[in-house]
Amino acid sequence: MTFWGDCGDWLTVLGPHLVEPLFQPPAVARLHRLAANLPGDCSGVLELRLAPGPSVVDLSVPLFSPSQAPPLAEQTSSPHLRSFLRGWSDPAGPFHPLSSVWLEFDLDREPQGLPVPIVCAKLQPGCRESWILDCLIPALHERPLSPAQRRWVALCLQEIPASATLLYVFSLLSRGSEAVRLEIFGLDPAGIRGYLERVDPGLLPWVREAASLFTGVERIHLSLDIGAEILPRIGIEGSFAHLPRREPRWKELFDRLVDGGLCAPEKRDAALAWPGYDSFWTAPDRWPAKPRPAAGYCVRRLSHVKVVCRPDRAPEAKVYLMFGPLVRPGATASSPASRSASAA
Image (cartoon, rainbow, N blue to C red; front, side, top):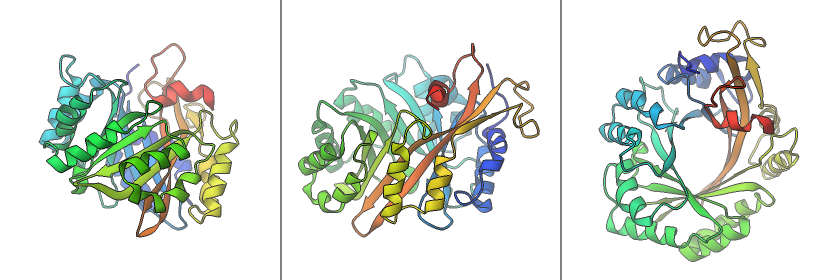
């Protein structure tokens, strides 16, 4: 099934849910202006800060099929991103080990058309270290790694234990940074502490407490930013296979964030209430003219929670809320929400 229109159509469907305390009108207006430039067959992930008070809301768009890449390649103003997306869409190209590509748009300022996003590549298992260092990262980052940066990235890759895997690689170039980000999946809090002890023990004193927040959490990710050294910014995120109404540990995780002063209670409650869905029958006045009425659903899913640690400031907690089209039974699923709806 093909979905016409743009991503903004699905934000319109979500309208009654894009309200305080998680969303403020200026942030929602920016989301709409950006989403008007993004295709309607993509899911979206909203990144929100959980501390008290208003905040920026950023938007990420996952591309789960190389066929989704060419239209966005033609829209971007970045030559290296255009080349990378075209390369991924080529079945004979060098990027077939990627299972998806994510485009993260920062909305701390007014978007002008389609801003250049942070680019994130999701790896399939078994990618060679040499391919990551000498092919993937230079393509994402527009330039080869410096010798010092290459040594640090290689060290971080080599110290990943057999029980974990490198899942994502990011370029932070659009933020004006030379750093790349590695995101490792499969470490529990004790494993995070042991890994950091091996790669850079100086990170431990200000990460240890944040890691303990994720005790008992499933699907934990650790992210590190690497320039000429490992930068003083560590991200830890986690989620659960089931959504809150079937998984009480979601609330336990949010309660720990509230108790630690990292999350406003009202934002906790709003995040836990996010999951659900709409269809033409529940939102006929907001449903897109295309696809045909009743052609599918717009699903809302709680994706994950992240805590970002820096030595010079208090930890920052964020929640990631997924939304997007879910096709009707018998059609082809187009997003993780499609594959996860049974977990609701």
